[in-house]
Image (cartoon, rainbow, N blue to C red; front, side, top):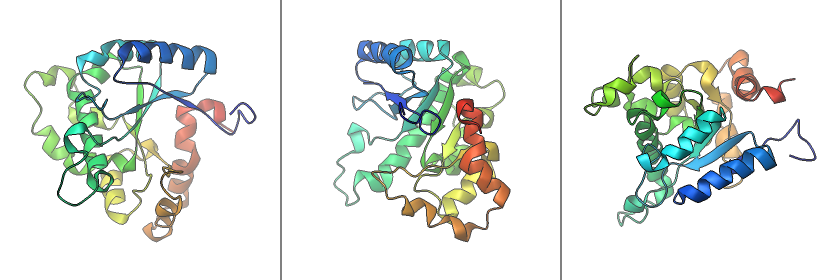
Length: 227
């Protein structure tokens, strides 16, 4: 990033289980490293999801800084070693995206801190498929955080398509999400780039959509990269 500041950006990671350490890291990342956003996991590996009141100081500070928050899944403690065959990466990551998104929305994080912009991965995990059920199961008291309804809050997120360009997740995401909130991503290096890009030619996507997904939508989030 230092060598090619117009080509590469940087997200800072924070140690979610340690809220004091998280606050120090946010300050260091923004003020010293001059990052473009903060990266978090979908849970803190201690049984807490991002909407937990434990993280309120973090959200206050990120809102003050007009931060972009990029959220990647982590299998929670409850489900990281289930003895039923599949490894956590097969199913639990995308389930935990839905847990974390729902945690943020129904606990009012987006309502209280509207300056934060959120990105998550895998074409939203299971969120697009479960959005209707989520709407019909809003916890008592959470309605006050959803003045325009649950769908409106979910559609404020940005989703990248890493390892989720198969026809089925793409169809659900494109049906539910605004197309200007869809971003290109691959999860490289843990995931081969090919598992994302090899699926794209068979989807029949327009050149305009591909250009928007590939660059223009991201430029609106990160205008310093606009060419």
